[in-house]
Length: 201
Image (tube, rainbow, N blue to C red; front, side):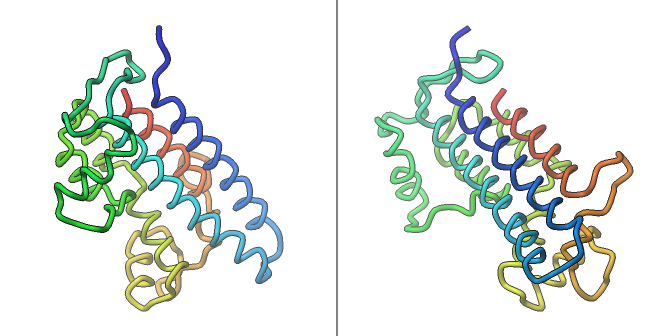
């Protein structure tokens, strides 16, 4: 069977998520210092960015078409005014009457972009990206706190239930073990992989 263009962003996501998970755990499993705290926080921020880039890329590839999904379904170009991969974002911004790209890691924004572009695999992407088992929102709230350190971002991070403290989101809470025998950060990586694969079937 012919290769799918989606294999590249999936491979890139898996590689980066695995690396960031290793770096997080390495820093979280030694006595806490400012350096290990920084490493853990940056790993969370980079994980969020990695997921955003994956979502952006699969929407662009879906809109451009000329490929097959992982399950072998051929995708055609979604619109006649999309003639190159580089034309997808300008077309999207024109359709949305915006000068700013969507917040790709946000499921609603990603799905809205897919809808505007009329991608052929819309139902598959929506079912995966919008799945309730996706850790995207939990990661986003943790990322936002570590990136901005605001009162509201702290409150939203705590509201995910992933942090032991009810006052301050401690980064090392993400290294706590879940029921499945994985740390929370490891379970996020596993869940992102499941959602990613489902989105490009």
